[in-house]
Amino acid sequence: MAETKTTKKASKPKAEPKAHKADAAPASSVIIKGKPLSTRGRTFVGTVISNRMSKTVTVEWDRRKYVPKYQRYEKRRTRVKAHDPFGLQVGEKVEIVETRPISKTKNFLVTKRLE
Image 1 (cartoon, rainbow, N blue to C red):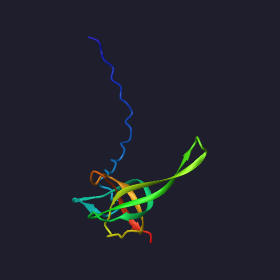
Image 2 (image 1 turned 180 degrees about the vertical axis):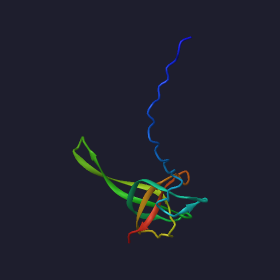
Image 3 (image 1 turned 90 degrees about the horizontal axis):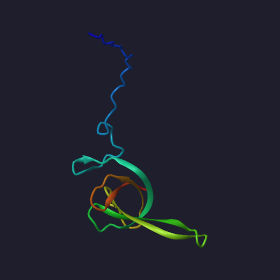
Image 4 (image 1 turned 30 degrees about the vertical axis):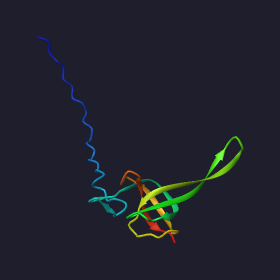
């Protein structure tokens, strides 16, 4: 019979287990539908233009888009729906941050009033 060689590999030091995202404290303490709402992605500053919905505001901010053909900029605006834990009024400046989808159209959370 043929003998088989067995070699021992040098064992690597085991890495400590990584903390799960659920274990980490969320950046904001807003709880929606029984779950804490963690923030991620981009942050924007805009103005509240509508607060007719329950716990939801529409926020708008202006941006400039370059048009290469005319070598000029055009004004555009972005409107998004955001969760409102503060009870904001129309015309207030706010900071919003991207988060997981809260509803079909709502993916942002108001984090603070600026004015």
